[in-house]
Length: 184
Image 1 (tube, rainbow, N blue to C red):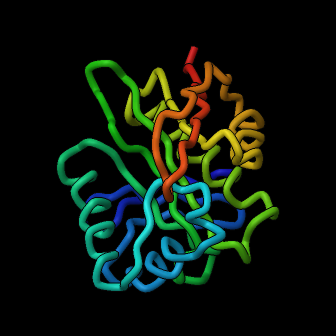
Image 2: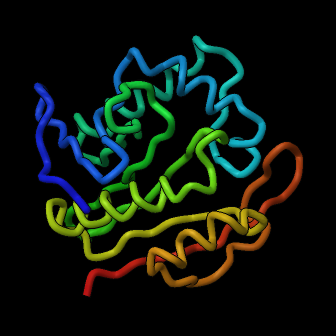
C-alpha cells in the first residue's frame, strides 16, 4: 500500500509504494536519464530523445523548471533502498485554473512487465487528485504503443479518440491516442 508522503529538503513531495520510492529528479540522475532517453527501446514510442549526455541537460532543466514554475512535477522512480533512477513519471502542462494536467512516464527496459510503472502511476494519480486538485489527467500514447494503451486502461483512463497523422517522427507520420481520467 501507499506510505505517507514526506518532503525533500526543497519541499518536493517524496512518495512511497510497496516497492518504490518516488523522489525528486536530481542532477546526479543525468546519466540514467541519458541512458533512458537515448535507448532505442524507450524512444521508439517516446516524444523526447537525446543523442549526447550533454544534450540531456536540457531535459534535466525541464524537470526542474516544471516544479519551480508550478507547471508540473516529475518523480524519479527508484526501488526501495536503492537510490539509482530506473524510470520517471509525472505531470506536465499543469493548468490549476482548469484543474488538469498531462501524464508522462518512461521506464528502463530491465524493469518492464513487473507492474512497477502501474504502481508508480497509481500513487502519483492519487497525489495529483488529492494535493494538486486535479479533476482531469490526460495522457497521449502513440497508437502503435499497445502496452502504454493497456496500462492506461488498467489505471481507469478512457480512450477519447485518436489524433491521426498528427506528428512527424523520424520522417514518418505518427498517430496519438488520447486518454483521460476524470476525478468524479
